Image 1 (cartoon, rainbow, N blue to C red):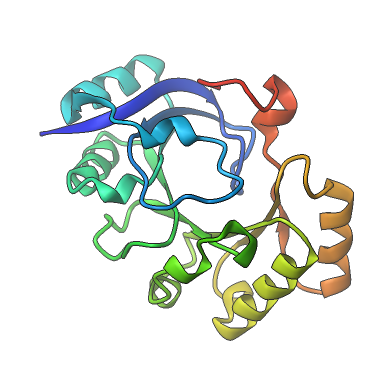
Image 2 (image 1 turned 180 degrees about the horizontal axis):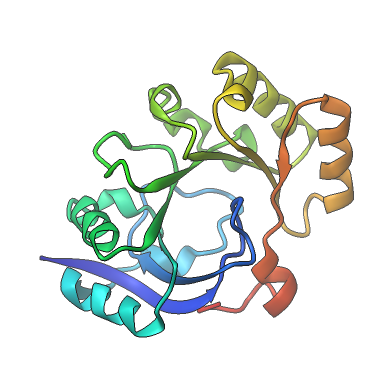
Length: 213
């Protein structure tokens, strides 16, 4: 059993509630969305076929506590749930970044699902699989990437409709060099909601063009 892989590397988690912690990254190839602000367009292309056991062994070399499976959109590949199970079976804390357009209920319950809800300025909001917001649990996370105040206000409506802040961590991620962290922080404070500002640490550390970090 093998998956199409774009790249693997060992680095710090740039986002999520675990931002700043070391992790082994597995970036799978292929994506069904085309967000206007996408910063990993290279993952659209066909990847290299790598067996699941090879990915597990490569992760083991780095002795990580956390393993992140990202993309592209990982759930496009039917073998991804098996990869997630194998990584969890190996004893690591496993994270999955998914764009929210595909059902997440087939993912191993040991996996922390980081669900990206696409806001209108992404151009992909109509592609969301809204049933996902009914099945997320307290161990999961929901992220909104905002390109402006209208996106943020739209996110607040979704958060209220699904009672997300009562159920799990909710992240607000300003598009790098489009929305300033200061503006995003002000919006969060004005909202009165327990939202977490989610900056892309890797871009501040290594720059927005760097890959494999």
